[in-house]
Length: 243
Ligand code: SAH
Image (tube, rainbow, N blue to C red; front, side, top):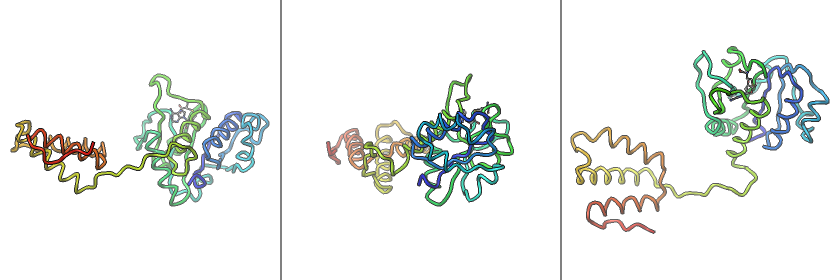
C-alpha cells in the first residue's frame, strides 16, 4: 500500500531538488514526503519545480532528525550512491521494491535519501534494514537526488499490485512442487540413461539443474513439454506435450 510508504530526504541543500522529488513521487503514486532539516523549505523554487505536485509539498512533514522521520516505521531502506566501508546488505532496486511493497502491507516503511554532497552518514545507514543501490556507470555512480527518487519510486510503481496500467502480469498456472519433483526424478533417470550423468555422483549436477529449473518456474504446459522432451530422449512417448 503506497500510503504506507514514506520518502525521507535528509538535509537537502537545494529546494529545487525537493520540488523535483515531490513531482517524481506524485507521478508514481507515492505521496508521503518527510524532510529532515532541509536547508530551505518551504521555498518558491521547490514549489516551481514541483510543477503541480503542490499537494505533496503541502502535506510534507518537516523533522529535526532522522529518528523523528522514522517514527512508526517497521522497515527502513537507505538509498546509497556508493559502496561503503561498513558492510550492509544491499539490494538492487527491483528486489527492494518487492521487499518494500511486501513490508508496506504490515505498516509504515521508509525509503531514505542522503545529502546532495555527502549522502548518508554511517550512523544514518545503520538505522536501515537494507541499502539499495541503483546500478550505474561504476566511474560515475551518483545520480541527482530527485532522479534517484524517480528511479526508486518507478520501481515501486511497477511492483504495486494496484498499479494503474494495462500491463497486468499474466496469471500463470505454475507447476506445483510435486510435479517439479516428478520432473527432477524423470530428468535424472534420463540423464543416467543417456550416460550424461554418472549415477554414482549425481549430486552436484542435479542440484545445479534444480536451481536452474526452479528459477525458471515452469508452468504446467511448459512442464508437459519438458516431460515430453525427456520421454523422446528416452526413446519412448510416455508424455505427449500439449502444444
Ligand atoms: N555524493 C554523494 C551522493 C549524493 S546523491 C555520495 O557520495 O554519497 C544524493 C542521494 O541520492 C544519495 O544520498 C542517495 O540517497 C541518492 N542516490 C544517488 N545516486 C544513487 C545511486 N546510484 N543509488 C542509490 N541512491 C543514489
